[in-house]
Length: 250
Length: 270
Image (cartoon, each protein chain N blue to C red):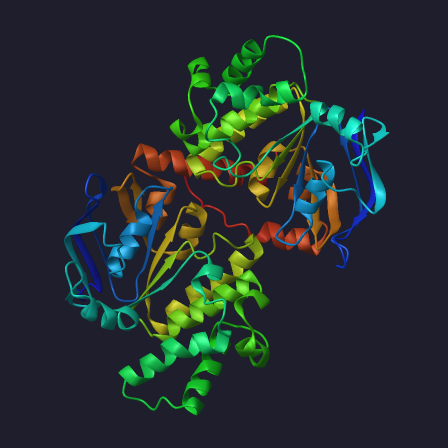
């Protein structure tokens, strides 16, 4: 069943040429879809549309069968309950003056979700591999990788239908990145996720489907394995060929 | 055996209350490509700043750094000034902040170029500088030199900016080129081009390279020998081919395993 459907979407910022043209893809419920592109590909703009921060000028986005009405505050309130995001920089996405408990329960309060918020936060923080007493501490007491875990806990605490991850592991060191990728892999089994990233390796590790963007257009889309093994578009081919690989051995 | 171009002996770097780099020793031979691998906070960038004598005053070095026969630790600023450019030049991570946003690119390339021509006692008039500049722009394979020399940094792409930064470093004809994460801010397709460009240029010109990166695969493509740093200390060093395929240290092993995981993911899932 399709959870998210992007249909012939086009977008341009004021007075500019189109940033996105004729973008169409679907995200089945339970799937992990990667949106891959380099700078200028339009992936960040596409993410803004999916977050409801802007509306497409052409085409439409359907969420769970109904159009995403970015301009309707009533619609957006319920949309935000069902769609959460994890951003790139764990240093700027957590309020430094709040305890982790307050940070993680923020979506529960904002969305007026009933229930025992502390209990829900405890469950979320445990799910991302941190101790429950982390809830009483402040962001500066955690490393970059731990902060990203906290951001993930905040994203999953309201049990969203869809998690949008924007370069969510790109700012992390390699040894940390691999552990956060493991965490995403674990939680993604029970969730639908869209990963926006320039890093093909991370997307390949996490997503069963890939959409490759270049200069505002989809150049190739399909199953991860098919694209990795036999990329059809010259851009995808050069993208894959440019990724530095480890020397062979061991 | 030829004399080392750079010899770092028991280098420690510390602020008033904190040790940042502990007891580091390594050498780079003339023309050799050497890699420094480390994650954030490993001390790799501080080490490179120490080598070029650019440490902030709050960080005190001890030990020895001998570059092209001269001691860097404790050397007066004037002596370091003449070493920089002549013996060592650096390409930094973010070309947008490394370049002057208010100066046309041609003027920026001309500055180190003119300095070097004067140092070598060669004519450094406008015609000579322009001629050398064309050669340099050609060498770093920048397109449309007419337009480029008049353009400001924000008017060209990130990859082109980094090529300009490389041209400026090469304009000095240094014996050692330090490249500190020079491709981290770039797209992978651009990174691939810059890696190939850097490798062929240092080989062609016989310049030694100190390549600093957190990306094991990139380092593996660039250098002959590597040192892996963690928390300010060396955990392992040796031939890149050995360290990256059969690491002895457990931390290096963790990094190598992680890099292989992403490589394996790119081969497709079974």
